[in-house]
Image (cartoon, rainbow, N blue to C red; front, side, top):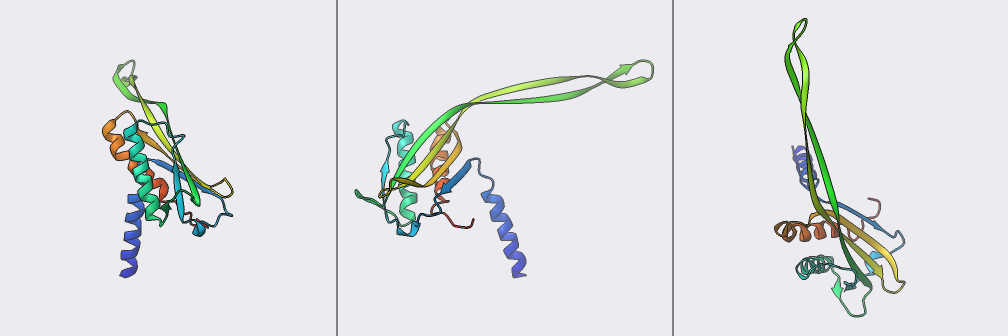
Length: 177
């Protein structure tokens, strides 16, 4: 019975975690020893956001880094660089309706259908987090998340912290996964 409960819980948790609206990816250096990193410094030179969104990104990122036992320092082991961008996206949706009517010479039959096409234009945002070894100045980890609805202030308030948390869920990397 315990085995079935475990399988059920695993399936439910997989279903819940796979429902994210964001596309999150990460990559890392196989030679980096992530256990040796204890301190970090946030660098925001490349973070071209308004002050509200910048605070959302940096607050969540600091929270996530501290939850991974890293502390902020002026002479850090890691430099954390954050970038953000957005692109215009156009979704096109078409639906067709079949038509039926009276036809010759056999009676009822198929006819011409109607098609409707809708377009939806919006901006989709992406956040990229680069983690650099401060001694070697080499990138040791990179995470990116996209799918933020940048046109809606209410959505950004919720989505920016969510996507940063999802990106950082992959740090430190679990080797072999």
